[in-house]
Length: 151
Image (cartoon, rainbow, N blue to C red):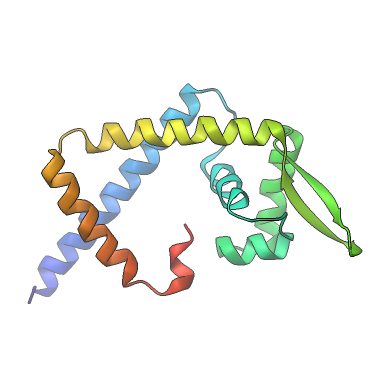
């Protein structure tokens, strides 16, 4: 069993790693000139997982943010042509968000940026260490409540 001090140290290391991952991903996004913020990137990636265009409320729930935050993100992505608002075919008062062709192209670039960032972050690890880390991360993620897994 670990001590509270050891758990606190692990928590601090995880937070430092998370901040580093975000910085590196942001740099890789900027290098590709997509003009997408990390939050917009997350929304675009989340949209890609839906089989049909979701409502703003669905996105807010999935991203665990207030609806107003989703509106701001969608406004930015719509202005750049990566998403569009479309009326729901069964209820025209409901607006859904769909990814455009330009948004799908941006998603491909985002995947490349994330892959490059991952390669940079994992470079110090051997293949064996990466496998162990993957197993540990799976254990942590599988132990999380379902709502927290959508990041």
